[in-house]
Image (cartoon, rainbow, N blue to C red; front, side, top):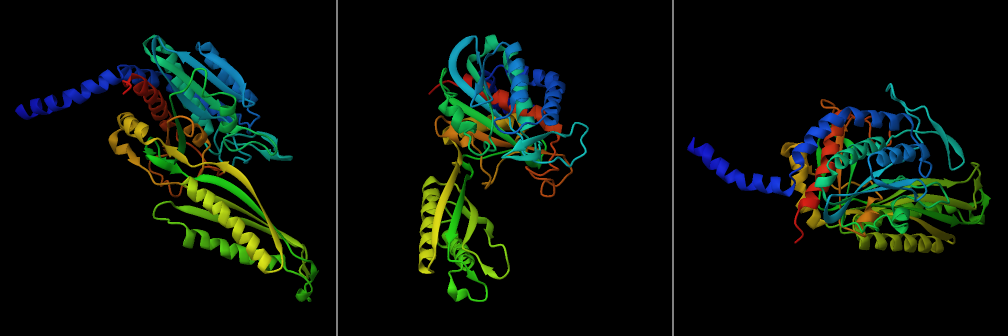
Length: 433
């Protein structure tokens, strides 16, 4: 009995602190349980009616109508189809933002869900199938669940909640702007000015588990094109021209030395990959031109810039040395997703409280990219992964994001709702130092 009393005495200060930090946590749990069937309905509706980037018109209307009904100040048409909603709490305080992406991918769904997508659309001039193959349907449903909870406890919230439903996270159609970068240009972080922002992404991990890390989490993602021009000749007389295929091959091999010999991978991992090598149309003709398509992934901005410079130097100088020319163009993508260290340290206990300490861990770096990173360049931000692989299934063998067989276990949805809601409330209830 004395041991139990002593243990309670030790625990009481931390329990009291947690309760003082967010006295609404119990209500969040109760409301999440009550709203889970509705969250599942939203998720299935979004899944069955996916829309591509900058074309999320039906999706945006469903979201805007629901948020308007809940009493939010709603702005539509942000960055084409984005929806931004503000809920002012009953007490003064800071402004916290929660973000969900809205767009689907040009993928034909191959699963057998009763609510599977059979949608078709046009992407960059081609007719394509459309599917929420990256799980954004889950993100929207969870954020709508959190929105509903906030609305029901509005008078008790110290500060304001800003919800950001963002189009085109996967990238806009060719020739268009979109995504987080355009939303920022159009003022999503202002009026009211955002103090911190949180976001999540479903991932092939056991359903209900969470992974996060302070600092770099996801890589920057840039594309590049190298166009090599030689001189066309007969394949039987290669000395009569300059073979751009051979030049391109030399460039591909030389590019491998950037990471293996020029990047300190113990401090900042990086990847340089050539994904396409296009040129020529006949077996006995040395073509005039070839084209290489590649990607750069990095976790450090200085390393990212240095890799871009080295690619240009290697390509142009290798081509010049072999009698050809090379032109390089970059499709600058997303910077690295870097979680604010102070904010992450402050909020990590929230994740452990929500999912259980045994279900939360510091995850590895991942080479995938996310345009949530643009928000983090403007305000402190924290991004984390939520597992959606059914329990008993090895996540390593489960279909990955962007697969036509990707599927999410809906048991993870209430965990995501509670995580988003509690992160916002814990942040608002934490005294400013």
